Image (cartoon, rainbow, N blue to C red; front, side, top):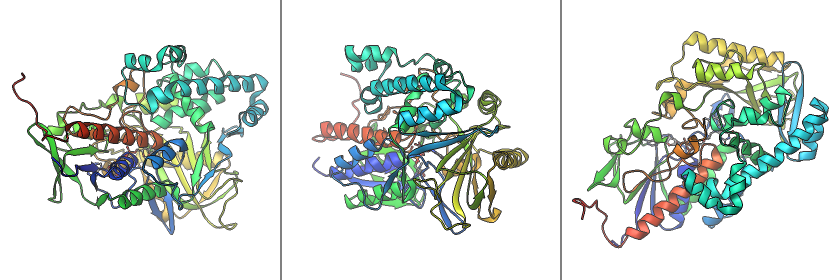
Length: 513
Ligand SMILES: Cc1cc2nc3c(=O)[nH]c(=O)nc-3n(C[C@H](O)[C@H](O)[C@H](O)COP(=O)(O)OP(=O)(O)OC[C@H]3O[C@@H](n4cnc5c(N)ncnc54)[C@H](O)[C@@H]3O)c2cc1C
């Protein structure tokens, strides 16, 4: 078989885009099939009034991952993707009026914590940073950048030197309990426990290992002038320049299987695309739900509803703000964190008193808006929500109550927002069900609850030869940089497999020996 191998990538989320870029760079004939009109998946931008607002991920971290990917794609950092480092990582507020900023610089944060909660807590913070860095160092090469290991393989990869590190990453302790070793102030436990939600999980059930997210943020958070959706556009255009073809508003409806191997993709629009390999970038649980036909369904295990990660309720609007000095990233904490996660994960309802994340997308380095005084700023607000049922339908009275509570609570923290409801784009589980079908409206794949969860996420390969997976529901996990790394892992695995089978036509061998 001398023909250039054809690869279909289903989905132009970050995982699919990275895979498409790397495969196209290596000369594969890549076609990306995407049901939306634009690339990016969850990294999406919405038209809210006259503003375009990022309404998905807003925190850009692990820049090294993208630099490595671009290097492999023989490309420079895209010029239109100006990245500005944020010195204030986030501003955190409590309803008693307390406010705490965190910075990339440990000593600056420690000083702020000392002013906020005393010197003992500042010392706890320094110890916490050291431990989070150690967890990250232990897992970066053996887990995050590598293919999905089993617990045993992880131990082997770490080697003797890494073994003591592995024993210290505390996979069997919850993040909340581990934080108690460093902080007596419940507000600081709440602040650092929130990092579990970056993986769609509860700090009361996620392993302490997730403290590595604190280290990732401390290593740097950037804003992208073109927004996170600009990152998707930049990668898509680079992949196109490397020869990949993008078909938007086309939905893959079946993985074609011949002689036990992946042979191509059919679309709902009637297209048929033969291929030597297919890479699926949607949620792995969508395969099990039969979104891509019965053959693909047999290769995947469904995510039980109890194992689903968080969904969200979000608002994007141009708004005039006053009363609270917003930074770029702002978090307004609830009084009772445990009750909030009990609402979401145990009672499976919208939180009665939510923690509210506000991204003021026109605030830059100095926390000042870049728009003229009195003009509306781009504003994005998110509260965590349960992944309820496939349709994501929530009782409209419950939805209204959560919305009213959210904005009433922001006013209690002093933040007054004035915007035209007609130019506010709201998205909740029902919208996410339509945008990302068969995901159970969980935005981060399966929740990272318990030590086993890291080892039960699907890896790059499936039980169907020639079908690969990439994205936030697969190893190494959710979040833009992690999903990007999953795209690289899947591309590498696919290339290695095709290289080893290229000289002969592939076929399942029937009848054993
Ligand atoms: C509101 C929100 C806030 C978030 N905040 C952050 C954050 O601050 N930081 C962070 O790192 N992460 C955050 N995340 C998570 C992050 O966005 C995701 O983990 C990551 O973008 C997932 O990328 P992915 O590769 O899995 O692809 P996805 O973004 O899931 O995209 C998958 C793509 O596949 C397409 N697709 C699926 N099925 C088909 C089909 N049959 N045919 C054709 N196309 C198909 C979909 O249309 C979609 O475009 C957030 C997510 C959301 C929704």
